[in-house]
Image 1 (cartoon, rainbow over the protein chains, first blue to last red):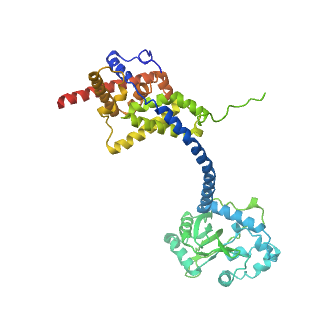
Image 2: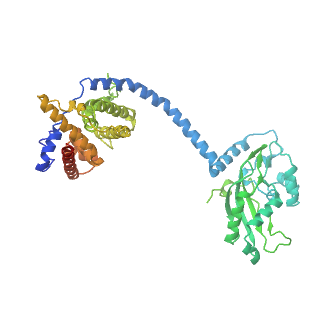
Length: 279
Length: 188
């Protein structure tokens, strides 16, 4: 210990020197047995501490993996990636229904929300299938209502209540734009979860009228779909969905649902797949 | 040439570095703690807690960031803060006269011994009323017995800053003691 009385580093003035000396003169009497007792106690505890550390490491790793999985399930974007990954694993697995190659190879991210997406020419096998659904929206809606999904087939999301949805969209059509005869088509990209609810929506293509884009985005969370099904199980998926606000309605309806732009073919390379990352 | 490292566990059962730090710095840590807590028993408890915490977090210690004594004194500062916080909840911060005999060991007569105990009791009680920053520098200086240079290293400030801080702390302590004495006289 340094000699505090002779410490030249402490230039305390004379009026404080007395207190300094008084404080410095305090003696600290440790119990003679305190040091050895404490050392023995520490030595006794040390093996337990080391064992505790060894036990804790696997638990921490398991907790980290669990947290990552929860995050992947809880965050829509991460869940979409996880769904793509799991689906790709399932697609690569051989199935007994070898007569449905095109259905098995379709990645879920490219499932279409509407019948027209399934009308898009993809390959020869698919086009036969698609021929059944080329008769228009109403017919396809009916088909979605009555078709029992094959065990290994994909079922695409369908609007549950088409007239009700049209009324819903009309409610969001800004009145001033209706009066001014301003219309347009807004293309949305929606994440439809396994219950059919829209969990996440973003603008894929603007109508050119910000108010219409905003109206479509506000209406999106209220849309209800039949969820997509893969191997008979409901799954979440991204869909592209066009909302058309008609400028010159031929009937009383001011909206038209849906006008669908087909998504890229399912067998297209990953490099040209749409970027599903939310902005 | 192949060199062998020393065995990882010495006879005491503690990690070798830690055992060395314990023997070297236990007294410093104890004195630092004793300056700030009311009783010898509390000082022993807090010192035990300090070394137990240090042992538990031994793997996290980085010698590039702090010297062992600085690391131990930081743990001690936090442990003392926790201890005082728990006492404050119970309203038992003040040092009573019968609890400081270990601090006045070298007084020959009983009368002088009692006077000295009263004086130390007042100093320690007044120390508790100072600002945290003043208490810290006084504890390091008069408790742990560090030099200005060592305090500067511990607090990561310059020697001059330590001298200034210490000067102000001692002056505030003196004022606090004088105020306490005046209050006692007025009370009589």
